[in-house]
Each structure stands twice: as structure tokens, then as C-alpha cells.
Length: 505
Image (cartoon, rainbow, N blue to C red; front, side, top):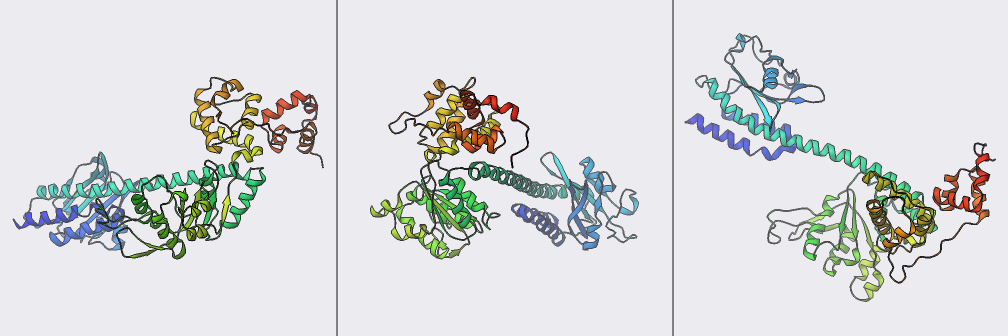
């Protein structure tokens, strides 16, 4: 009975370690230590398969020196350990001196001592991840078959631990790859979307972004919905020393007041009904990075004081807590509301308004960036065409219509329209098809576009050695739009013979 009680103690303690998958090697060593303390065992080890190296190696042990542990490397099918991994079947050796397949790779066992050896596979689901082996489990009166059955139960728990750890590692690897891809995509998007802008208002925005990004200053982004405030906030983060830290967004309109406070500042266990455990808020999770508060004009008055304190002191208490928490986080806020008017109406704290106004940046609406429209259309189309695996083309007249439109929803409206056209258009988009998708509310009417004169077109062509794509970019037109104008003006005949000549000095 004593042995059975000890087994139950070992199983209970082992089961309690499954939650420590993030510290795999420490958890494995603890399991082996428990086996050694409760049961008669000289040595034990967990050997796991290393996919990169293509062999098994000891990851945790009891009774082995660090040097002996480092020797524990086994090829698949090599020795008893390699054979157990290859076949997925347990092996019990009554006396290792009589077993020719036993390698004693670690050289930890005296050559003349009688030692029993048991090795069982470690599985998670259908996969075998490694081998658990022990020397002389329990006392000599216990049959090896009983030892094997018990070790297989222990190996089951070890398998859960290893499987969870590998899932977490695979997830982290995928997240790192995704993060790298997102950063690469972001760099490309920012290059096309912002750095390529020819709008004086947008260039001023970029100059301000460059100035404020390396600092710790709180930034307030102003502008209509859909003007790119989130992307600009991300750009500030990416250009700052915090770019390797988190970038977390909180939408102040997405949650009711009590949940918004918990989302921002976190909560302690028992803070409200259902709070059965403590949880950190976004401000804690963004340590060393940036928190972006979107639509801060909608932040409830009851939370504005707590946010003001955080901006001033960089400290706060969780909901339902008394412990003061300090974090190193940069704050970027954005709104499409007039905060000064909200202050006058008593809906926004004046002291918080002045704190946020340290470095305001106003993003221009798309109707004030007329010269950027052709480039934005091309950029958004490239992105959407990759998602939908089809191409979308416009007649010159349809492109002209897009450039004349007022765009009350700004860039978000433009992207949504292009996506809808990709889904519905059967061929090249023409004005009569396009008009049915454009808003017709008062103030949203089409307006004439500044048309480059023939002299301006000729000057741009001369400047760029008659390369149409470069001249079109200079004029704020697409390639097709410029070709259309050249044909209308009869200038296309002048270009062909001049192609290929060296650039003018």
C-alpha cells in the first residue's frame, strides 16, 4: 500500500506542473526530482527530439552531471532510447549488462553494477516527442511491468507539458514571422501612402511626425474620420526608439464605461462580478511601447481624471486595487471631434485638453490632397488586387471622375469603393457604372479638377526624358490619364521618336 500511496503523490504533483509549459526545462526537472524523492530511483532523464538537429538530446535529468547530460544525444533508432522513439513502444531492461543495445551514452553508470533500465515514449496526440527513461525505479521487488505502466502514466503528463510548450513556441514563431511580415508591409504601405505624397499639407504632417517620433511627448492626432490617423500613429511608433515594443490600440467608443476602464487600467480579483482573477490592462501590457487611444473625444468624464494622472505621473491603480503601478508607455491620442468645443460644453476636462495639446498634428481630408489621389488609387488597388486575385481597370474618364469626387469618407471611403468595384465590375470601370456608387448628398458633389496645361505637360515630359510614368507622377496623374491627355493634345506622336535618348543635362 505504501508504494501505491507514493505513486498517487507523484501523479498529483506531476499533474500540478502541467500549467508550467512556458518554463519547460524547469518543469521537467521538477517532475524528475519528485520521482527521485518519492520513489527509489538512481537516475532519470527526458530526451526530446530536436527537429533542427535531427536527433534526440537530453533536455532535463536527475542524477546526471551537466557533462553527462550533454553526452545524451541519440539518433533515431540508435540504442534503446532511439529505438523507443522510433517504434513508440516502451522497453524494460532487467540488467543493462546483458543488453547489447544499451549504449550508456552518458557514461553515468558503473560498468559492473546491476541496473534495471526503463524507457517509455513521450507522446502528445498522435506524435511522439521524446523518451522518458529511469534507472532502477522503486525497489527490486516491484515487477518491471508495473514500473512500465506507471512510467507510461507519468510520460502522458510529460507529453501534455511538452506538447503545450511546443504549441506556445510554434505560436510565438508564427507571431514573430507575422510581426516581421506586418512590419515589412507597414514600411511599404507608409512609403507609398505617406512618403510619396505631393500634398503640401501632408508633407507638413510628415515633417511634424519626424520631429516628434524620437521624443517621449504625447501626440494628439486631429482630423476627419478615414484620414489615416491610425496609420500615422503607427508611423510615429515605428520611427521612435519604442518600435520594438508593443503598439496597442484602444477604441474609446467600442466599450461601455466600466469595461473601458478595465481595458485601459486592468482590474484586481473581485473588482466586479465575474472578476475571478486579476488582469493587467492595456497600459501595463504596452510597457516599453505605445498605446493609441482612438476617438479620445468620446472618453467618459469619469475616466478623464484617471487618464490625466497617468499622463502626468505615468502611474495608476487597477480597477478595485490599491497598489500603484508605474509603467513606461507613450500615449498617442486621436479624435475627429473639436475638443475645444467639448471643453466649453463641459464634456471634456480642460486640464486634460491642455495635456493632450502638447503636440497636435492635423491630418488633411482627402479633398484637400487632390494631387495625391492618383497615387492613392494605384496603391490601394495593388493591395486589394493581391487579396482578391483579380485586376481592376478604369477608363480615363472614370479615373477623372474619381479625382473630381469630394470623398466625404476620405481614404476609408476610397478603399471601400475600390473593394466594392473589384467585386462587382465585369470589365473596365466606366463613368456610368461608377456614378451609381458615389454619394449624392449635398456638399458631396463633383468638383472640377485642376487641369495641367499643355505647357505643364510638355515641361514635365522634358524634365523626365519623356518617360510617361515619371511625368505622370510629377503632374499628379496616373499613367493612363497622362496617355489619354497626350492623345487628346496630339503630343503622343512627339514622344515615340524621343524614347531612349540620354537624359538632358
